[in-house]
Image (cartoon, rainbow, N blue to C red; front, side):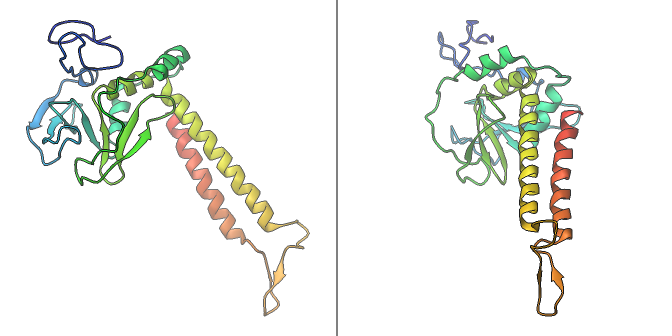
Length: 238
């Protein structure tokens, strides 16, 4: 549990706003690293406060720049930056704490903002609302072209979810989805290729026998599916 940096009171578990002095507290970056401000006012605009975002370096050895709102404490990550930050911040998690994951999933964050679509800080187009991972309890705002927005406190929750083994479950779920998709592709190939006696084949106008689904096409589909499965397996056992 975090404490208010203004009055010292304990913050509620579902909000970054102190119930005693009404101060909004930055609880996210303290779990990541000390940061330095690179650009006080960038060209990117906070979708909550409509003011310029700061560009900050969270000092992971090499430069690691993200955007932060000094008012609402929201964070904006370019594509793949959030996943990289989580990987760098949380390592060596091999077990799943189901009890802790249950607590995290049941934690309903205080509604500091109404449920609505917000604009991308870069292109100003409305972003999509998506669940981050399986049972993380966090709904992210994502622009498919530019990145991900997190409201204040959501990065902390994602890191806690990861520490409890949430990413392990998420990888397993994705792997199972790939396995089911591969099985569906195999079933489709069997149906299209027909019986092994060749009764499903037909002849073209020159008299050549043609299969309704060529061997090369099936090899390409299966090769693609195996490639995707290997990708997920390598991430899980890294």
